[in-house]
Image (cartoon, rainbow, N blue to C red; front, top):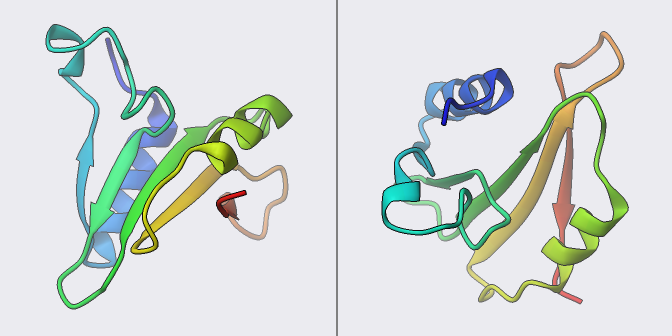
Length: 103
């Protein structure tokens, strides 16, 4: 399955900032899930940064409330950050980024 243009753009942005990024491409042959834990599109790590970023990418439709609640409820240890990025409706920035905390 082809990746969305938003996922590709997000990965390029993260890599330009020095993050090493893995995506879920090719996972379908190993798992029925199309995402990491059925929630996240990208995982990013960076040398000398003490946390891992788990990122869900959404397009122009915004962030569905159910999806945000699922991500907030999903447990990850303290050294992990859960984020949702969606295409911003405004012209000032490309992304609307939301950090989700454990409930």
